Length: 609
Image (spheres, rainbow, N blue to C red):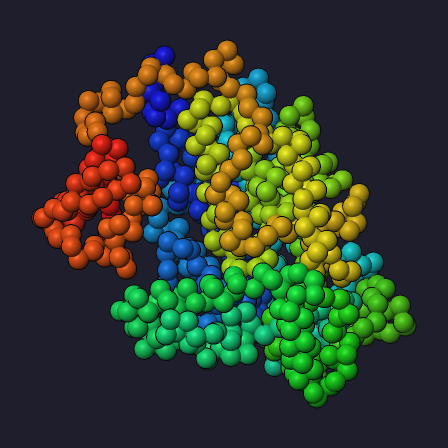
C-alpha cells in the first residue's frame, strides 16, 4: 500500500449545469480537493441558468438584491432594491470569471443520459453537442445534477395551439423581435412570470386579456418593510416598492463595511425569520392572511371584482407567495381585462372558451410555467433502474439531494429539497457543502460507491408527510409542489423545515443512512494506506501542529476573549498564568497576535482573534 491516508484517492467528478449551484461546484470542488479531475457540462452558451434563459419583459427577482447574492461575494453595486434578471445574470457571470469557474465548463453540451456501471463503479454519461449534434461519452466516479428546475418550459396543452396565426410565445423562450405596440395581447396564467410581464408591457399594448384559472395570494415585495436592526432601517421599499440605490448608498456600502454587513444581515434575517407563517393557524399565518387580503382589496379599488375573483379560500402559503401589487394595479386599468372563462381551444385568430366566447389576438403569451416533475434526463442506476420511472410513480429523494438507487449521484433541490422560507442561494450553497462532504468521504475512505438506503428514503418521505400535515402546504390549493401519480395529496417539492433547519441537518450527515461498496471489499481499512500522512512522507513542517481553539476547544474561548478582543490582562509579547479545568495553564501571545495555551492537556493551542 503506497498511498498515505490523506494523499487523496484520484477521482473524477462531473457536474451537469452552470447555474448558481453548478458554479458553486466549479468554484469550490477544484479548490478543496486534490487529485480530483473536475468537469462541468452546460447546455447553454454561457453560465447563469434560469437568469440566462429568462429574458421576458419585467423579469426580476422578488428577493432584495443584497440578500440574493453569494455569501462569499457581496456586491455593493446593486442598482435596485429588487434586481432585474439581466443584472443578476451579470453578477453570476462576474462570479464565474472572478473565481475561474469557466475553465472547467464545456458549453453547448447537454446530457442525454447517465448509466451506472456496477463493474467499474463509475457513471457513463452520454452527451451531445447542441450545435453539431455530435454524440460522445464521458465517465466519472461522482455525478452531480445541477440542472435546476426552472429551465424546461411547459407549453399549455390546449387544442389548436399550432393553428394560431399570430405570435405565440412562452416567457422562457421570449422572442424579442415581437413588437407589442398597439397589439391585442392575451396572457394565459397568473403565476410569477405573468405577474411580472403584464405590468411591464401594459403601456405598449393596445389591449390585454389575462386568462386566470386559479386564485392566488398576492403580496407586497419580500423584505420591503424592514424592521430596524442594529442601526439599519431601510424605509424606501415599504410596501414592496422597488427603488434605485443612489451613488451615496453605494459609496457607503463600499466604505463602511460594518454598516454594509448589518444591512445585508438585516435583509437576510427579515426574509428567513418567517418560517412560522407556514404552520396552520399560527398567529403569524393568520396575521399575514388578513394583511394580504386587505392589501389585495386596497390595490383593486377601481375594480373590486378583481380581488373578489382571485383572493383564495385556502391558506396563505399553500402555493408559493407571489409578490405582485403592480399586477393588480395593471388589471384595474381600462385596457386590461381579467377573463375567468375556461379556454377550450385556439383557432387561427385567437381563443375560444367553453362559455362560447371568441376573442381575437395578435399575440398570445403562454405563461404556463415549467416542467417541474424533477425529470431532467434518463438516469439508469443500480440494476438498470430508471430514475424517471421512480419519479413517475412518486418523486422521492433523501434530504432533497440523494435520489434512490443512484450511487454517487447528487441532485440539489430535488424532491422534498426546496426550502420555501429565506433566500435560496445560501440553501444551494449548503446543499453543495453536503455533496462535498460525500465526495470527501468517498475519496478519503476509498469507497467505490455510496448509495442512500431504501429504508432511509422511505423514512424521510414518511417524516415529510407527518410534518406537512400541520402546515399550510397540505391545504387544498392547486400547486405544483403537491401531488403525484400515486399520492395526489403528498407534498413532493418542499423541504420539511426552515432555512436554518436545512443548514443544521445537511451540516451533520448521517452516514449510517448509506450503503457502501469499498474499493477493496476484503479490507475496509485499506484507506489507512501505508500508515503515514503526506507530511510524514515529506518530513517537512510542524510535526506537533497547533489547533484553532475556536474549532477544537470553543469552551475555552470565553476565558481569554471578551467582545471579540483579547482580554485586557493579556498583552502582546507578554505572558500570564491562567487556570483551566484541567489545571494550571501558561498563556502567551505570539508576535502575530495569536494566543497560545500550554498545559498538560492542551499543548500549543492557538486562539485566532
